[in-house]
Image 1: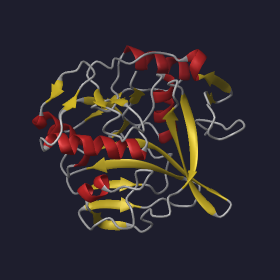
Image 2: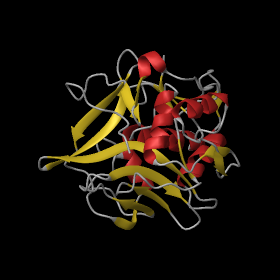
Image 3: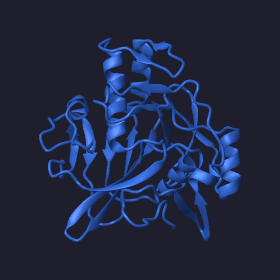
Amino acid sequence: MAPIYEFSGEESKAIEVFKIGKRRYDLEKNQIADLDRSNWIVMPHEFTDGKYSLEMSPTRISNCPAVEKVGKELGINYKNTSKDSLGREFIGNNNWHEALKMDLALGVKAPSLEETTDYLRLLYLGSQGKIKVYDVSGKQIESKQCEKYLVDVVKAKNPWRAEWLDADFKTKGKELHINYHVFDKNGKIIQKSEVLDKNTLMKDKTPGISLENWIENPTKQGLPSNKTKLGNLYYWYPRDDNNSVARFSANTGRADLYCGRYPSFRVSGLGVRAAKQRE
C-alpha cells in the first residue's frame, strides 16, 4: 500500500503530496471536491487553550456528490455501508489508508488523537450544560443533542460503529514516534512527527480506563496518560511494530480506543470523521 504522505526535507514542513499507486496528488493544487460543512461543530481557540480552532463533523463521512467525485478520481469505492446509533448512514469498509486519503482529497483531515480528545471533552461538557457548544452557523447545540453525539462515539450499545483516527506510530532509532496531520497558520495540511510523550500509558487495559479522566487529563498528544484512572473503556497501547494506527469503536459489549496494529483492517461499520481549520 502506498503511503498517504511522504517526507520532503524537514518533517514538519508542509507536505501536500500523497500517492495513489503511481499517481501523485498535490493537495493545494488538486483538491478534488468540497464537503458540505453547514452542520459542523465549532471547537474555538478558547476551548483548546489557543492551540487551534476547528470545525468538526458531528457524523462520520457519508456518501455525497463530493465523495463520489473523490472516489472516481482516486479509484476507491467509497459508499455507505452502515448506520450509527442515531440512524445516520456513513461510509465504511475502507482501511486506514483509504479513509485518510478520502479526507485529504476533500481538503479536510481525519481528527488526530488530540483533536478527538478535545472533541469528546467538548461534547461531554456541553452535555452537562457546563459550556455552550455551537455549530458553524452560530446556532447553539442543545445539551441533549451534545449527549446524543457523544453517546454515538463512546456508549457501549448497538450498532457496532467505529472510526479511524489520524495517528500512525513508527519507531525511529530507539524511540517510538506518533505521526499525524495538522493545519498550519495558512490552513494548509501538514504532517508532524513527534516522539511519543513519555507519560503515555503503555499497558493494555481490557478493562479499562476512565473515559472522563482520560479526556480531562490526556497527554499532550491526546493519549491516556500513565496516571489515568481505572474505568470501563478498553484501551490498547501504541505498538512499536511499525504497523500500528489508531481507531475508536463501540458496540453492545464495550467501547475501546485501539492503538495497536492493523491499518489494513476493514469492516462495514468502520468509518472516518473529518475536521477543517476554522477560518
